[in-house]
Length: 74
Image (cartoon, rainbow, N blue to C red; front, side, top):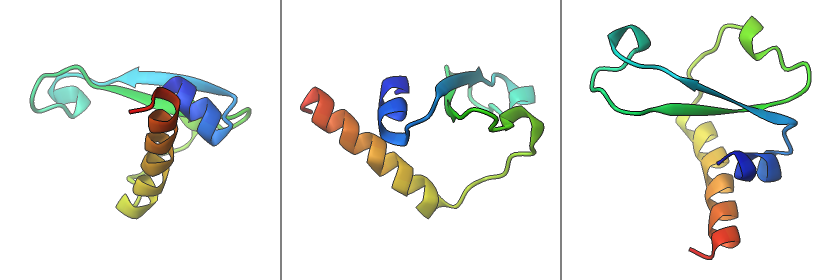
């Protein structure tokens, strides 16, 4: 996923976060890893996040999906 993000989004790096148990908004225990594209001076941890629109997420997911299919011939 990190290679796909760097190639597709042109980001400068990647950050990962894991949120577990009820305090981490996890109702059913499972391994859940968030992968964030990072850009120089993006201030990711200095701003309050918000839920993005499903159509916006779909656009970025489709870009990653296309890169993975092309790269790994799946």
